[in-house]
Length: 427
Image 1 (spheres, rainbow, N blue to C red):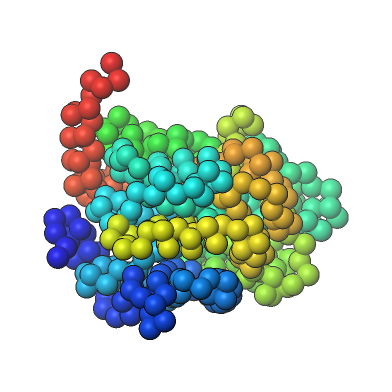
Image 2: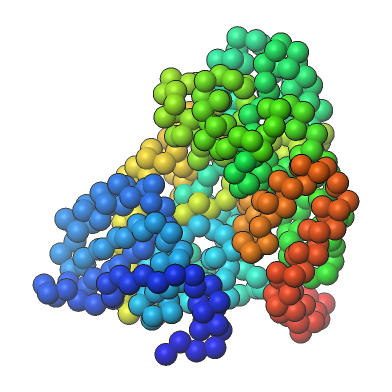
């Protein structure tokens, strides 16, 4: 039976019902069955091929991979029914933090494949823990990167230079606008799109631990987010006349058709853009939010990681699946399929639209998306959209602090209790 915080977590988070086959059993041929449920339906074809190749090359293990729509709801429902898969493929976000906090994931510190993972992505996952918890609970597989996409042909035609500071970005926007071209298409009708430039600005203007620092009572968002909020408001003058009237798809289409020179979005948008214009020549650069070039950091979070469930009865078989997924050929296939960034060390070929970010990726000058720490119930994207409509920075930041305390009350209590109990350990 589920007990304690595991039961409380799944009952709180459950939003629907879905039954899938059980896991961790032997099939009729005596093979150990390992079930993997992963949350990216757009990568279904890749995982179907992986499943086929794995099963063709293993006589003693049968791999079953599911890629359901709304996978997090499916998983939380299954947790309630004690019908856990063996491995889950999820993002590096607050769901992962919640699963660790609920003791639902296995400590896989002894998995040999971790030695092949880039240290900065292991650190990003480590930082997602609400409070320090010994152990490693995921294998980071691929990441994505967010900054500013730009039309390379348009830039070359006009002789525009890539900006490296905030002032240079504004000067570039003025130059583009003066030539009768729209600098950005924003597409803020879909509230989540507001988070892309927000995350990129936060990366260079605040500490990567700002959310944890707020939980500890060491600072406030009103103190930390002022410049970020002001920059978001400033950029509105360089987008379409009414950015909340146009959706993500509208923005992708407009950028694909050359209706704007740039687009503040992540690498994940490129397939959608190319579906409209396969010949568009896209590159990217890091969002220059600061006037100090040394402050520039690329926003790159773990887009897909694999976790073994704590109650998985076939740990070694699960590890064999993880080793197979980490084979260079399979990693490269995923990169090619999804325009992703590998978390594994090695000489992988990345999509050309990441050329302008390559230096930051190679040197590990990356930080996580700040919204990976935001509770979904707080709807930060909607808060930002509302702020961009009314423009009241002080009121927005005050509400941000108020809402944060409201939706993180229990976590804040837990964090501060931990800090009190461990306050003398480093002395």
